[in-house]
Image 1: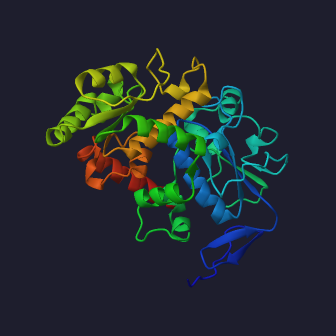
Image 2: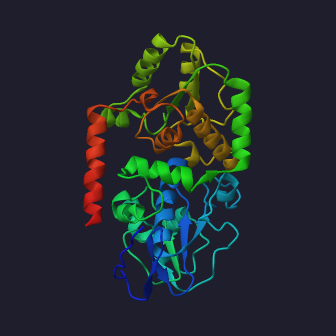
Image 3: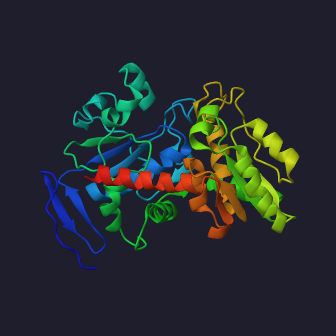
Length: 359
């Protein structure tokens, strides 16, 4: 592969020429500390972006998922759920005065939630206050990233320089490639999935993911236009042609699960904890008795959805979107209930946002 040397983006870096891609190489060991936050869909997207940024900037990735979303005792749960050759799970968070953003100085072991509460950070200022800009390089020894998504527009060029990326690539194909080649589920999760699949998936299955809580509130339905009726229509269309198929349901609402189980033939769902409030994502409910177990249940469902013969989901849920990228079903059997004009506007908005962020 022919590579051209490019000018270093910031002082103090050199450019290393390789046969795979070009990356800025720091003169001393530097770290990218990825803080956990949000549900699994968003934090996985953010981690995919971090993998690209770390390779581009020559930093070693440290992932800290000790936040209360999926950890009840402050233990870092990332190595319990995932592994990656790009992530050094054995290295502890370094003690350093060279930190960016500066608010993290002397606070590297704190969670982002704690930092937001302690410093009264508004949600609108969260990304710029607590996270580096993925479009820039930094001199500090430790750079902290805390983002809710994959900033594709700012990392698109860096993705194109990585090895084996499909060309031409899109946001979806790039995320799918990174997810399948750089981030892997733990052996424990895969064993649980295999056991559930072996016992219960004995017929054609329709995977259904419904984020009911905050995605289906009256305000969200009014603004976004997706309700459970959209799922019913998609399911019934599949069942007309495949009457022996059964549903595998993944949802954060026990009420929705009960409705689907009474309405359609189903395979056993994952035995999981449900919130009694059903007003926010399960990971936000502080009454959950075991956050680690809840995280395990969520990822097992994600992987089982990917094993189904059909998949019905709403792409506005990042959890559902990642399950769709992982899905082994044919593309024509993956049904996004938000498709149509809403999907068109969402895609256009994302493309425009990426364009503006890349300036």
